[in-house]
Amino acid sequence: MKRMFAVSAVALGMTLSQTVSAALLWQDFSLTYVRGENYELMPSDDGYVITVEHASGHSWGDTYFFLDHYDFDGKTSKYFEFAPRLSLGKLSGNALSFGPIKDVLIASNWESGEGFDNYMYGIGISLDVPGFNYVDVNLYKVENDLWEDDEMMTLVWAYPFSIGSAEFLYDGFVDWSTAQDDHAAEMNFTSQLKWNVGKHFGLKAPLYIGMEYALWNNKFGVDGVDERNPGLLVRWHF
Image (cartoon, helix red, strand yellow):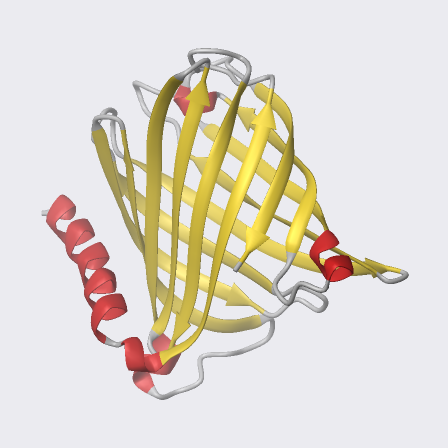
């Protein structure tokens, strides 16, 4: 029953995103290349990741999708997430903002990799934090394919700033999931610090160069496997 509810929540978001295109308020596409040398639990410590991302805002909520292509010494794999959220404020026509909270949403996520699909459902909160483009928190119940079900909290943010005429963006996420009998509690704090070089070439959309740093405790729920992985990145929005 819980798996059916989770799948239904994600399917509802997919249906809305496909059929209510007229309600599109904004969208953003990007392509990112990250090269690192300290990956854990991968075919090699050294590798690269190419990520395609799409985010969109609608009159009913928002969606986020990314697809990672991994390459470690020629051994490739793929992983994606699709996360639609339904805005209770927009759907009800009543503002749900109070204090630092801008909106309350029904949150869902579909994670899919090599041989597994995980489904997540819960509640999302959009926060109004001065200076930030966005700060969002999602609390999920997770229906896992390969290990026991657990709970997860996801925090995402984006903070733009300038030094002289140079434009920078510091953004990222924190994922924290609970421990169960077959896996440890897991925390992934990955962030990117980027300089918009595209501005100096007359590009309308940002072209960033910078670095990513992944601080991942108990990676994939494996107790004691901690990743500390700096990587160089290029990210192009179009």
